[in-house]
Structures are given as C-alpha cells and as structure tokens.
Length: 242
Image 1 (cartoon, rainbow, N blue to C red):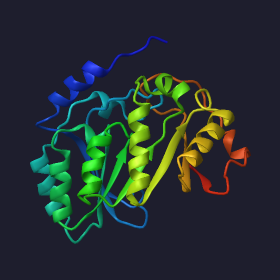
Image 2: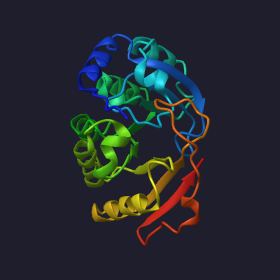
Image 3: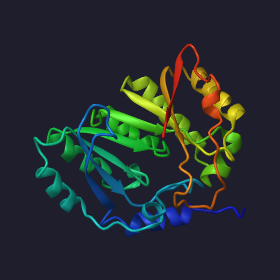
Image 4: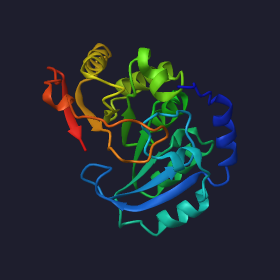
C-alpha cells in the first residue's frame, strides 16, 4: 500500500476550515455522552488517515458551519441539552477550538472531547483551565503498527496525551476500533499491557469495525474473534461496542 504523507495536507486542510471549521452538527444524541443528552459538533479535517475511518467526508472535506453559527444553535439548546460533544475529524486541530469550548462552558453545558491524542499541548490547556468534563481517547495501535493504521507518526503525542489525562484526574475512557486484518488478539493483549504499564485502570472499549461502511481505504471483511478471548485484566475491564 502506498504510504500517504499528510503533514502538509493537514495544514492546508485546517487553514481552509478556519472560517467554517465544523462539518455538521448532530442536534441530539443519547449515545455519545453516557447518561446525558447531547449534541455533536463534527469538526472537518484530521491529521491521521486511519484505514478504517468511517468519516472520510469529514476527514477529507471542508467545514460548512462557522463558530458563530454553532454558538447560535447552542444558545437555542440551553436548558434542553446537558452536554456538547466535540468530535470529528480531530476537533483540537482547529485554531479557535479553545475559544469555542470556553464559550460552550460559559453557557453551562458539559463538554466531552473525542480525540486521537495528537495535540497534547491543546489538551493540556483545556485541562488546566478546567474547560472539559470528559474525554474519549482513541488508542489506535502500538508503535509497531501505528503508522500503518493511521498513516501518521503521531504515537508519541498520543502517549503524552494519555499521561496528561492520567495526571489530571479527569474522567476519561480509552477506546480502540478493531478490524481483524489490522489488529489481532496478540496486538490487543500488547495494548492492554501497555495501558497497565502507564497505570491506566478502568474501562477499555473495543469498537468492532462495521463491515460494509464507507471508509478511507477499502478493507476486507472483519471477523469478530476478540470476543472469544478473556482480555480483561485485574485493573482493566474490556467492553465491546458495536
């Protein structure tokens, strides 16, 4: 498979999306923030090109909604929704994301961030300023397979983000999307050992690849073999989604 370089294209994509950074808004969900009613802001652009990505139109596309329009929408949802989920794409890539998060918090919403962990310097700012309430951190793969799966060399920033979250005490979850051609039982066991070595404890969510979905790369049929294994450890409880 031809390797894709995305460092320059990432910058170009983000610059194009500065004025309209948000691709779309899901006005209501009960699934993306546990026990809370929420909406989702889907940010255009990403600095990874995960082979199994379900959102190629968001990752490769341009935003259509400005911060101002998003804030107008959120004002109309005050006292109706509990939370706002920042997702994408990669929401922390955008220049003014901290400003938007700040405004959302001022409205009284809880804030959840879905992130690939590639922007620890931004994550550190929102943690230090207590601007977020929950994080879903995507753990793509161990270093040996990270570049193949994500088409990026961003494992070290991910690792720094994981450590920041562990040190912060903020509630967060770790999750991994699994395609059987890319991650097998041995890979998953190595990932669990790595999390234990980093002193993570709690829930680890495994999201099965959805066969038939439109993805960045054409992939074969994924089989659900991992559910046959007892992957949980004394400190990490593995849950399967999807």
